[in-house]
Length: 477
Ligand SMILES: Cc1cc2nc3c(=O)[nH]c(=O)nc-3n(C[C@H](O)[C@H](O)[C@H](O)COP(=O)(O)OP(=O)(O)OC[C@H]3O[C@@H](n4cnc5c(N)ncnc54)[C@H](O)[C@@H]3O)c2cc1C
Image (cartoon, rainbow, N blue to C red; front, side, top):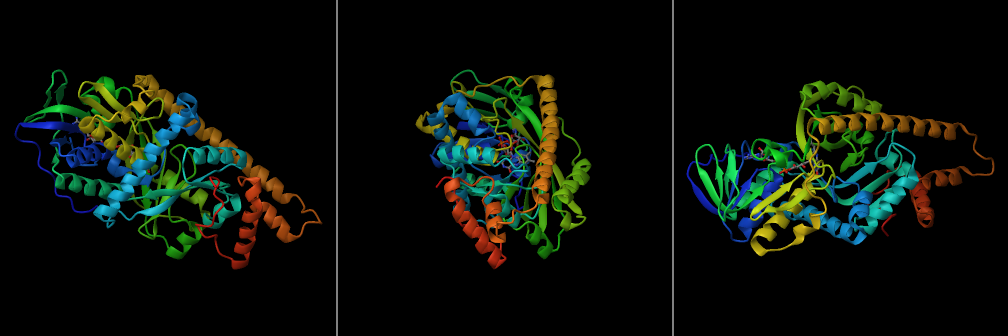
């Protein structure tokens, strides 16, 4: 963590154009963008800035949303979905540009995200790549051989490579964003919970422990912790707690021989497993999901077990750090962005896909307030839906468990199919090079690109090197 002296709590009454409640990435981006446009803004944070999900996440800045692309297209139509994806990409670009302007020290951005499949269903991956490409994402399909050249795990098959994604140190990014917002004139108060809010009237009134704020607009960016202030709004989110470990240093050669990809890796669309190398010689690894927070120490062994299962060649790895964090999932898995009533704005519900979408939401809400921009209306199809209270949470937990079981069964079947393929004798007529080319072309490569990929695979075998990350074969091409 970069040095960040605590901001003092609010001690005197304030009158501002905009009050932002919540000092996570959604609140900080909104405050900065309002201040940049010359309006007065005060941000109230109950604890420390980015002390919740925004500072505890694994730092994958990805395009898109927590919701499945196909479901969004079904719900709002292709053109509308394409606009939404362009907005999410603008959020990602905002993070990248902010880092470029504020300095990358402490944030350590790395390019790329590999979304890896643990089953041999190349058709499904190929369909996803096609849709994502159509929505404007820069993605490419990696066949099994290429994935395993970078990630030396027998668990993995094909993958989608997101070229414009990046990874960051999210807490340090948030702290730099806060400093930038203050430079632009935003006033930030820590240890200042908003205790109550009176949203009626032209000037909204917010009560904090020691002082009051009056503001023309209020932005609610408190995520799941809004519960105390606005229980009915908070009840539209299912809180999901996930767990992260960072290993002790691992011998660099051994680590990079196993994990040869420097960006982010996810091998599921659920909590298990998302990981990347941090500090050059440690693995940051996250997984598991519970709807009631549990002690992260309980998950050290389970997550270290996931590492051992994926990369047995690393041997036993020690765990130096473990923590948890809670994200807010909406029922439709899309963020809640918009005006709840005159001058009362919501920027919430970013789920596990909050780094591009908080940046996107902060910009959209600031533009709406200051310039009357109506982009936020693109999100009106995703209205506030009650998340089901205790029943909703229980159902969510059951869904997580069932999905883990069905994923594990699908993985076992895929491994069995692969073992059966391997045990089949090679046809006599095929030269070993042709057989290798066939293996390289399996799975997710469109038929017209297969020849190229096979050539690359043959070339890589000659060079005995993993393929260069930039080498072509973009499904979007
Ligand atoms: C373990 C983990 C890993 C994740 N990994 C990723 C990832 O790799 N990529 C990705 O895109 N997303 C990821 N996410 C999701 C992402 O972190 C969140 O979606 C995002 O940070 C949400 O930001 P936010 O500003 O809405 O909420 P938060 O960061 O939760 O901030 C809300 C803030 O509001 C404050 N607050 C609440 N009520 C009040 C009040 N009444 N008065 C004053 N302050 C109040 C809280 O104290 C809190 O600081 C992950 C989440 C977790 C938990």
